[in-house]
Length: 431
Image (cartoon, rainbow, N blue to C red; front, side, top):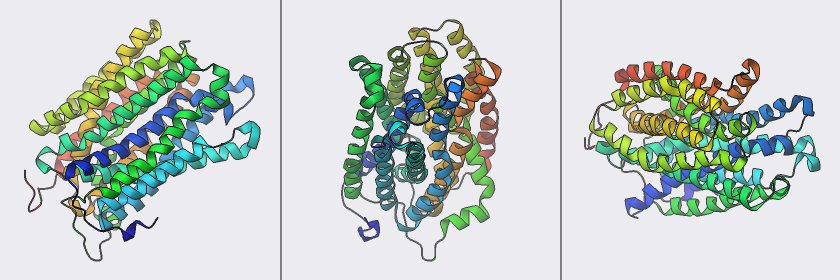
């Protein structure tokens, strides 16, 4: 579909644009969460190796999960630039179509037993497609939401986190429900596809909503505008600072994705038990992001983020020590809930607004998208694979906590340094 034929501005009420924008992030995280929850299943279906090297199979499964991060910078560069030149709405429509394609490739892919290595390649291709689309999705969505009301950038831009919380809750619940209804053999044979098929069906609905939405009030078309070139040549330090400051949020999000695998494979909990903590913590990520982001609007956003990062990084290791020494459903819920509220809600939910304050509207989608994609590449999607390797190397299940504590340090430093890059409100913007 050629989105260039769409009219530049629609007259639909802004709530439709806000809803349509936030739901795209929900589709992204629905797919990501499901893959993380079924990573063990995929290790057998698409990346089988000899039993004596079973950890390599799981590493390969998480490696294909992380490979999506390699495509994110490319998607961020192309789709972010497209949105800055042609409009936020058109960029969002295009990213949703591509995300739906990535989910469909995974949902419909035959197993290794049927296609051999072609199945493994197909899964990697689906992750690359998803990563390319998601790379441009976040930056354009953050720009679209934050530009609805510059005085409440945090509140509006955090709505995509709440939407993501809804999708993570739905994905976790559906995975839990499958393990209640079907046997492990049935899940591995075919039932794992059901929630992915639902995600594939949601894509066209979200695309339709975005087609009906209006354009961002701050978007202005500029002649001979090359946003990607501008940020890479004149704002390199800003992009690097933004990419690193989101590190803790990215790492914390993917540690949460990894938690059921940790509890199933190393702490010997049942799959249905391991997923309860993810369900409970994801419900909290629906409620708390707007509250924390609104607090960031009312007080010093950066100071709030640095406080949450220091607390989250400081308690990560003790929390994982508690879980490893006393593994149970209750402790799993406690650990995931505390880390989700502090890192995802308190810290990460304020990142989109801070990004929006760091980049001018003419290059905002590109700047946010490239910064976010680089941060995800370094600190995000490969996190499950990295902690799996670290656990295998050091024979310690508290490595996820140590990883979070380490990532918190550069994140805090870059939040502090970001004060130099805050841009003044542009003419016509309320503050």
